Length: 223
Image (tube, rainbow, N blue to C red; front, side, top):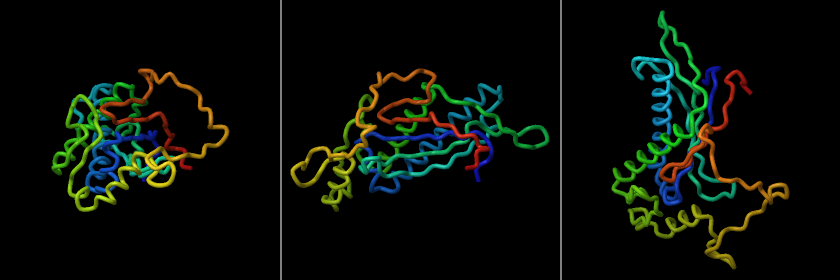
């Protein structure tokens, strides 16, 4: 299904206040995956129009496959979206044939734009369902004090989703505290990072949505 063209791996994670809701509401989870896919396509089309000198974004075709991953490496509830997107666009050439044009890595600013627009789409999905949104205050991402139907009808299960997303223990001596993790010796002392991201790196955060797109695969590498 995947053509032999460059393919970029995108990883999109959401704020803590969103993860529990995405964990039990499949419609919201679907909306989050669709939001990322559509914003990836929009960004690629706009970049192609500018870089290739096209008259309209309608001349371009994009493609991606998105999957939902429910946990992180600590097996906490961390619903996030991974996508494989063609790292460029197809354009109809003379004679009606489709030609692929690689666009290369996006800038940090372009990734931030995708992240921000994805957040706004997910916010609209929350509001469309009449649910409190973590983005109700447009200047800050806050934890959702949700009182929707699921929280009322299944308070015990909802509480489990919340603590699973937060990664805290629910019983025993560490109840209410972070779950202990076993870390291999060579990873026990990770290298310290300044936290700064170069403007040329395809990594960014906007409105609490983190988007990572450093990994590219050559489409000819079928393995």
